Length: 423
Image (cartoon, rainbow, N blue to C red):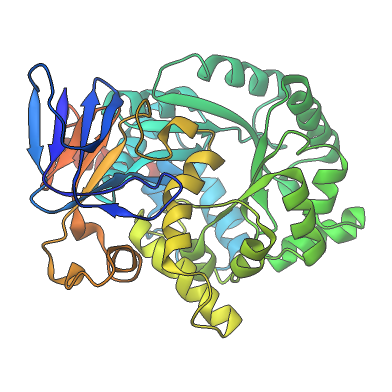
């Protein structure tokens, strides 16, 4: 049993109140107690004095491509289609499962420093990806990547069955890369599979204006309309990016119970545009936040994403009151968890998974404490992450990793593999 005490607790449990008198007890991988100090009949294995710092749920990276760490700063300053087809796809074709394993471990180190406790990872070779996360003690939900060039419907179904029973730290959701990389017959087969399992489906959707225009030329419909009409989201799901969506698209997204996962840094860096977050909030569309991959971001940092979500929304609307900090923090924690299907990781409450972070408030950027939540979103940074716990295990604390391997070994392995790829 681990006891957190003498600090502030933000539960994110249907409210934004910060409790100054709460303790949190963790028993194995779950939260045992949340509330004011009470007598415990027994001994704690570890007692962590928060010393006035903040305990809160970990951030959820609700859209990423973790193994793409190998492409960080490799093909920058290019438009999306050129970047994707001329630079990214050719390099990815050289990858082996061993490489994907190692590059994923590098991403996990970065997630931990950012207070991210789960990733929604869309990439090929799911076994290598899953094992990398398991070996590091990190939580991940793998997302299907089927398209015209990779995987088949039987393989997608097999992955769905296998990785939802694989390990407590691993889950799997049906998904495809995007409408523009996936033929209509294959898309309809994905929709049929989703209806067979009554399962949600996830994909890149309406990321660029050109994507939407080309879809309209092919089918006379926007990507959202096209996918919805074939029954793709009859059981919900998610759209990654959703930058170029119309009012009609947003109405469909709301009606179908589809989550939108916004990726502001990637969309800005690739000049894809600014998603209409305020309009989505007004319609009641559920939202999460993702970093996208380290090839297009290039940083796996939830603090930067949170700031950009609100800052770009204010800029788009010409309204400094748009997209307040409280709503953004909810997207980064509760919204992301629910978008990924991790309802047991969304907040601090008895019986929930102990996926927790400690924020160091004794830093210049977090003082004074007029409003801690606004400090988190507007001035917070990775330097404030003091501790990251997943499934009741501390994996990062005070700049040190506890993941079973020295970070320098991962760095050296990745450097060697990148050199191999460049040959």
